[in-house]
Image 1 (cartoon, rainbow, N blue to C red):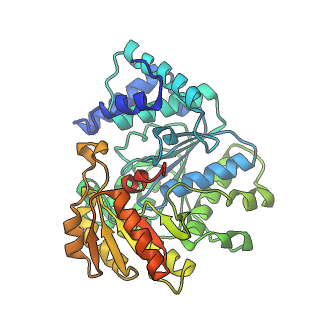
Image 2: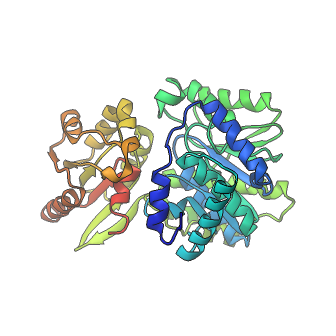
Image 3: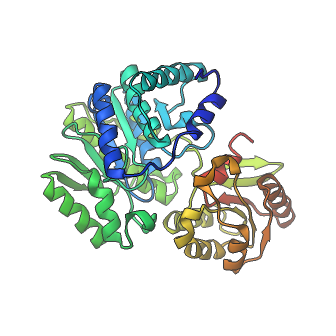
Length: 412
């Protein structure tokens, strides 16, 4: 297939099977493919990030710290918001479209030559590792997709690798387990022999599970100490926590590589980045709109706490949609939103995301919420109605609940 545009790339990827069977064998298959390609994932020092909340933000801050210090980086994050090219960042930015298409075409041709049959996430993960080696970056920052132990990214065996465990909560319970201990054990599965593990202080059951995996792998665990400094005050509390974790991980990565420590100037500059879909603010006709990909109780609680500090005297209008894979935590998430919302528009996200990303029916959201809820299946109309209502009530709008909902407005 000829990739003349990003539309061609999107079509090609959407035709790949999303969830191949026999996960254990799939990870072995991915490892085998990477061996054919020369194990690019093991050729570059890495920071590998697992957890429930904060993975993406921690990856962006680690990238910013390394870039400000003069290092080139390759960063794998997921899902994307505006373009699939966001999943394979060079120095924190997407490649220019023609350059991205050039590399994508070359990798797709390799897949044909070697008769490779990959899922959507497998293709993009292996492509990113291959791309980062082709461009010859100094460091790679890799965000886990789901879980850790069986995740497609869990193929980095360069020793020692810095592994990061972000805040862990009850999410993806249908895949990872019903308790924090079970979920942590899956996520700590990224820890390998002699690695260095960094995490913030968490609940005892999470810390014990991480320590057990660390001990079993003869790795070293560091609990990141808080950093209190004026330059961090521009960040909301949850992002201060993510930045601190990123800083400790980068600090340890550079020390392992016998590189000089980061300067205060680098630290101060590193916080000045815009992370897509994290408290992302826009203004439409005088109405502030906050776009946030928060989609589980832990993330939504952090969002609500931040909104209370940003707008202490206002109750916003929400536009919400959730994926069906969040059904088990939906009631708890909506109860948290209920504490702040004065009105919500329950909507959907596009069928373009395919059968693997169905949304919860808006009627279910209306049934579960105590706040006033209006149903508007069309996302553009839902946002337009929310903006109109917010202008009447002199408040702001929050769009949250799913990456895919925020993606609907990425190009608006």
